[in-house]
Image 1 (cartoon, rainbow, N blue to C red):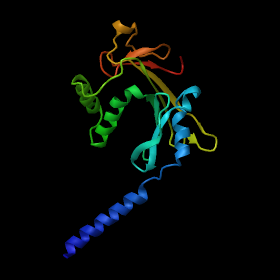
Image 2 (image 1 turned 45 degrees about the vertical axis):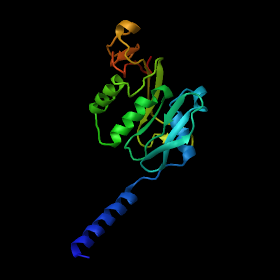
Image 3 (image 1 turned 120 degrees about the horizontal axis):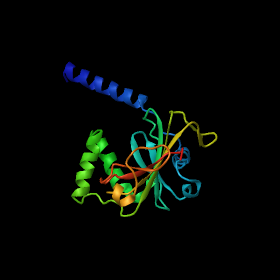
Image 4 (image 1 turned 60 degrees about the vertical axis):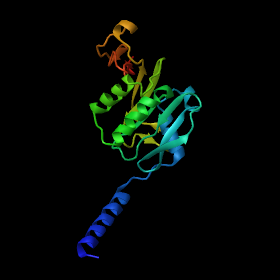
Length: 197
């Protein structure tokens, strides 16, 4: 074996060890489930399915969906705390977004691809309104001891694909005091709500 080959192998091994050492271990499954479902109203939490991390970087099922709601646990690799729960009718659209990001597609390009695939019939969108609940916060926002989120910022939307002001009677002007329609006329059209309402 050449010295150059051995140096390449050694460098690769060091980088892999560094990656493993730097990878943040996922919290216990029960803890991930508790945190993930907090985004939902209490009456929807017990039946919600949860996807999370048994292995760093690999999103997988932690428990099945029983009531049509699917929650995503906080990703230990991300810099902020974020959990989200959405109606499983939105999963083809949401899952496609995750798959695209994993391949390196970023920003607005994710929706450009998804919108084209919806138009081509490759992604099926819900025919009825579908909710999305989220909580954002600092990385240490979730307290495992109390099972609560401290200083989290909740966000609630209702997806109505292709909805417009004419079909809903909603304004597209952002507001903190009343619902408004975002991305009208697109597969991702949704009614925005804020907690100050």
